[in-house]
Structures are given as structure tokens and as C-alpha cells.
Length: 100
Length: 475
Image 1 (spheres, one colour):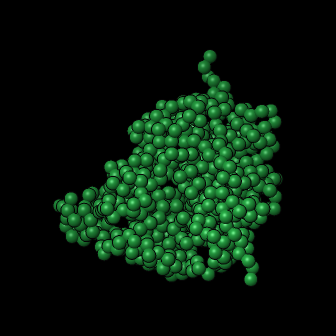
Image 2 (cartoon, chains in turn yellow, orange):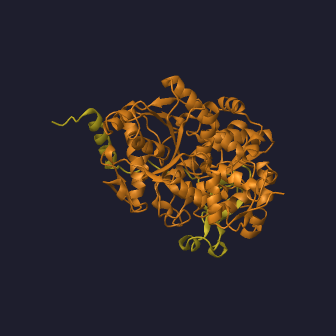
Image 3 (cartoon, chains in turn yellow, green):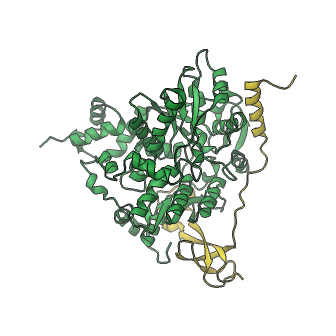
């Protein structure tokens, strides 16, 4: 149970597939238009239940609560060996190779 | 968005009224023909002169970024050029603006205007650096800010670069609305404008484009200071066209010398911009042909009735580069110059290295922007994300790259190339778009089309004959 005043993220469907324009590519039209936004809970709420939140601009929005105290998990990615190879290519080209 | 929903079609009917209230411009007053409008008057009526904009920007952490000569990259390009060729390559390090990109220039005037007109907040529909720029400038002016992004595919997988942008926007205090793929982002955007009464900080408003003129002017003054000459060419990454429009207008205000304006976009041919499946199969979320070509050939497809970004008026050449080439030069910039920047901003650098090899060694080419890099945006994050989405990443001939299927990294500087898009092809496509359903036009429309396509009277007359469009008799 997340308490009133907790920073959370909610999710809601904006347009169902039937409400989407016919001009869209088929793959996009087959799925709903979804939205996520964050704000402070206006009443205690359980994950997966409908929450009312106040966003940082003061708007009141309702939707399914999908995360409590959400943060950022994006990274620099896993190691990509090609990047070191680019270094080798351009440095040896300009400055010469260290290899005998 | 608010809890009362309005149907998609009902809302679109209110579009003009919502736009008028949210940009503070009555676009109808600029109409001068069947299709023509008074572009220069629309810009002039804002009341901002370039000197006013310089002052506003200097007081808000924007502009006066350094112009740096890329000596090692120039030397490398020269090594792979015929004798006497290989131009000097300079870069305008726009990443050093507050919020990390040239977009701060565009946001600064929009937010200044919003504050001046008494709006409580600003809204922008953008998945790119512009969101962070608007949020950063809004913070300075004490304005509330909402950024609407297209961020996730239907699996809920977010493009790492756009997730980073959401983080930056939230760091600057904005409310970020994240959506799945689809052009109905515009519907959400209109709903929010109607609900909040905030200012529409559109990328395509006069304020946004006038804000970039200072970049063009600085390129000329910086280049004169450093080299004693004006640049022979300036290369500009092109998406919605505002960057190219504003920069070129600024260059022309600073010099009468001929400066070739080259547009560059990443080639994403074959990927559909509104496709849920294709969304995470591209490694560039902006600066690509998926925006570049449609906005050149139909500039008024934007989120305001008349776009202030009209790139076909200003470009002398339009080239594309492949994704693998841009990643290659992004790493080369880091390794050879000690400047670590984001890949999308290096699109024009990739093209510049190839084009420098066609230019004489005493000539100057200026790459007009860089952008910040970070988790999500960094080229390692993007290459890793591409691999995890089934894209083949390998060294080889970049001509063989297939967007959405492969990223081909050059084996050497020799593999860097640009592909030209013929301007007459773009002009014809533009004319087909604006003249759709039109049977006759006036002399004022013809003059407008000449300016819009940067062509001649004879060229427009020939195309009008081809399309069976007659000229109305003058009264």
C-alpha cells in the first residue's frame, strides 16, 4: 500500500484501437495509444489499482498505479567492442600503429 | 488527459481556436493568396530583432558557444583526400548551452515570450533535446512546463535516448507525459493546451526559429575572428527544418559573402515513422530523413498553422549519411579530439568529413552543432540497444546498411560518403503537396512559390503547366 503523498507513476489508455485513425500503419492501429505520467498520490493506493495523482504542474490525473517512487534505470549499455576498434582504426591511421 | 475525454475528431475541429489562444498569433492575417502567406511579416511582427535575441539569450545561459577547429579530424580527412584537398573542419560546440544543445536558443525566446504575455506555463510536444531546453528555460522564468513525448513501443520498451530526455526534463522540473507510438500525440497535446491554457512552445513558431538566428551570426563572427575568413560551407543537421532556416537567416544577417548551406540527415529509408514495430529499430530519434524529407516538402504539416521553419527556401544541397557512419565519427571525435558528444548532433559532422574531402585544403567547412551525451544517448547505449533489438552491427561498406536491419560501421575514413538528394525532386514534391486540389493561382502565389522553392519564375511556370494549374487574370 502506497500512502497518500507518495511519488508514483500511473498508466492509462488514451485511445483504444477502434478509436485510432484509419490512416495509421496496421501494426500501430492494432494496439491502443497508452500514456504514463508521474505525480503525488491523493489517497492511499495499491499497485495495479486506480490512483488519483497531482502532477508537478498541479493537474489531477487518474490511472492505474504502475510504480511507486519510480526512478531512472537507463544506462550506457553493455560493452560494445566495435567502439574500441573504431579508436584503433582512427588513431593508427593518423598517428601510426604501435604494433611491430 | 483531463478526466473528461473529448473525441479525437471533435478536438481536431477546435484546433485553430486552441492554436490561436496558445501561440498568441492570428495566422489568418498573413494570408495573401490562395496558398501564399507573408512569411517575413509573420516573423517581423514578433518585434524581436537579432540584437534583442542576443541580449535575452546572454542573460539566460544560451549562446556564445566556442567554435573549435577539429585539427586531427581535418588531418585525417586530408590524408584520405587528393593532393591539395581536404578542407579545415570546425565545429560549433552547442552542447555547451544550458540543457546541452542548440535547442536552448529556440526555447529561450519561446519561454521569454510566454512570460511576457502572462502565460502560467509552456507545453511542447517533443521527444528530443528541445524538451530539456524548454524545461530548462521554463525553470529560469518560473513557468510551469509540460513535455509530451513519444517514448515507448506497445511492449512498453522505451528508446533509451528518449528516456534520458524524460529524465532531463523532470530534472528541470517539467511534467513529462510519455506516450506509445502514434501521430495522435498531437491529440494529447491539443487536450493539454485546452486544459491548461499554457503557451504552445512549438518548434515551428516564429519565436523558435528567430532564436536560432544568433547561431548563424555567431558562426560568421567566430569564423572571421579565428580564421580571418567567412566559411565556404556550413553543414546543418536537418529534421523539422527550423535549425537550417534560423541558422541560414542568421548567416545572411551577418555577411553578404556566399556561404554554401548544406543540410544533412541520417538515412532511415524504409522505416515508417508511425509504425509501432519500426519504432525501436532505429538508432536516431531525430535528424533523420523520416522527419527531414516530409518537413522539406510539406513544412506546414507541423503543430502550428504556418511553420516558421521553411528549409527549402534556404538549402543549397541536401545529403544523407548512414547510421553506422554517424556512430563511427562520434567515436572518432572522442578519440581524436577529446570531445565526447551525443551521436544525433554528429550527423552533420559525418557528412562534413566526406564533403571536406571534395573541398580544397584552404577552404573552411563549419559543422553547426553538437549535443550533450549521457546514459541512454551515448553511442554505446544506442549500439547495444540496436543489437538487442536484432539489428546487425558490423564493419563493412556503409552503402550496404539497411535501416532497421543493419548498422554498418566504416572500416576507414575512405568508407565515409554522402548521398545527395536532388533539390529539384524535393521542389517538385513540395509543389505537389501545396498545390493538391488547386485549379488556379494568383501572381502573389507564384511569387511565393518561387521563394518557397528557391527557384525561378520559369521553373514554377513550367511546373504549373505540367500540373495543369492556370494563373488567374489580374483584376
